[in-house]
Structures are given as structure tokens and as C-alpha cells.
Image (cartoon, rainbow, N blue to C red; front, side, top):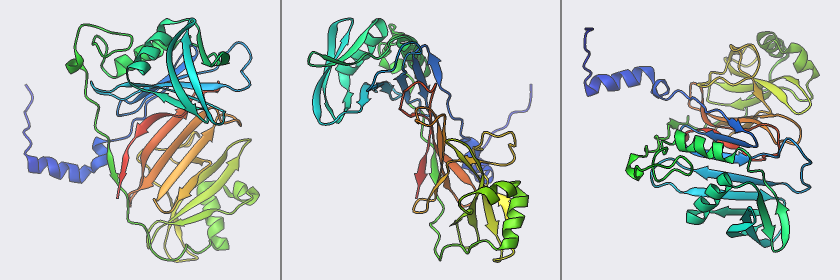
Length: 351
């Protein structure tokens, strides 16, 4: 037998201090699964969402409705069913499965959420039904596809550890709620102090040349409509978002950290606990349609799958003083008219 190691509390604290909290909480965003006309995904807290897509066959409706079934992890978490469509004012909506009304709700400006037993009953009926209609009075507003909804809900039951229990929506069994796994803890991230001082000085010509050579984006920088963005991170560090090409819907930026005296600043790539990018060069992070919020030291990236914005991925990071930490990632899958972000990673940025 191998040697056994016993760690005291002090030793464990020392290890945590040495390796840092990210070593124990390295981000592992979830993935989206698609079952026929439904996409489903869960985040690291096992909060799950299933979204109805527009069917691959047939014409899309003039005013499509997005239907979402969501549920938190844990034995006491209930089910929510939400609808979103382009509408104004208040209206009474009825949800019909195979011609039978299962639930009703008041919508405001096209938005409505069902909770409690009514939501659970509707989700179960959707999984077992063939045709769904959302009506306002006698008028049919939408017919969301139910093809794949049962498989999507079964995926949620399995991911949340509900299969075989009375709390499951599809994979029910004899076990009680006590058998359901608790929701995992949400990682906490401490944000760096907000920097004081004036805005960073613009890059000098020699610095622009050096930056273009360092990033390999010299040609794209010359063709860009805007110069590199400079944002203060601390007294000694500046974030530079270097333009590095654009397409029909997406503009790429390379995040670089600058240090040193004005006119002779040195450059290094910004560090991330979860490397962004969709290029082949994994050593160089790249952001898509990047945005910066100075009040929270938040860096956003949003890659559109196509111009109407019904698919793509988004990520948000916060600066902790040494690197950017992932606080949220979400995706809109399949480019089939979902218009709803499914969160695949969640953390809490702490002051």
C-alpha cells in the first residue's frame, strides 16, 4: 500500500493560499445539448434551462414565441415555464396541449412566467403531448414544437440527480426528495480595487508599432476604424483592447496589459482563468465584440452566430488584480430562433 498523508487544517490553508482559490474552482462551463427541436444546458450550480427552437422544417411564424423551462438544483426547487414574444400591453394567455387547456397566465408586453404546481403540470404535459398552442382567447398566438422536450427534461432530471425520485419531471421513481443532490456552491471571486487617477495616455507611434508586432495585428490595426482602447486597471497597469480584424457580425480584439513609462511601455497578453478565443493560437487570447465596464472592472465578449443574434456565445470576466476571472458564460444554440441565453457558468464577483 502507498503511504498515507494526513493534512492538518493549517496545512490545508497553506496549500490553498499557495495555489490560490482558482486551483480548486477552475471554471468548467457546461455544454448545450440539442434534442430535435429543444436545446438544454446547465451551469456549475446545476441550474438548468431547456429552450424550444423553431422547427427545422416549415416556415417561421411572423411573431415567434420563445418558451423556456427552467429549474434550480436541490430537493426543494420548483419548475418555471416562461414565454417571451414581441407584444405590447397585457393579455391573458392559455397553454393548450393536444387541445386541452393545462395552464393560464397574464402576460405583460409579451412576457410571462408560470411557477409552482401549474408550471410543473405544464412541463410534464409538454413532454407527453404532441401539439402545443398558446392562445389569447380564440386566437392562436404560437405553436411551439414539443419534439425533443421529453428528452430535454430527462436530461435535467439526470443532471440534477432527480432520476428515480418523486421530484423528477420525467424520470420519476419511488425515492423521496431527500435523495436529491443539493445544489453545488457558487464560486466567489474578489474583484481588484477600482483604480484611481486619470485615463491612460494614448499610445505613442513607436508603441503602436511595437504593439502591432507583438500581437501580430499590425495590418488589422491600420485598417481599423478606431484605435486601440486603453483602460486603467491599476496605478501601473493598463488594459489595451487591440483591434485584430472583423467580419460581418463580429469584431475581434486582443487583450493586452501594458506596464512601464509612457512612450516605452512593455506589453504582455492578459491572463485569464478560462482562456477566451476561437482562433488556433491558444497562447493569444482573443475577444469578440468586446466591452469594458470601468465601474466594475468587467470585460465582456459576445460572439454572434449570425446577424439577427439568435445564436452565439457570451462571456463576462472581472479583474482580480492578476488576471481576468470568468464570472458568467452563456450560449444561444442552433441558430434556430431561440432568442434566450442559457447560462453555462456562474460565479459571484465579491467587492
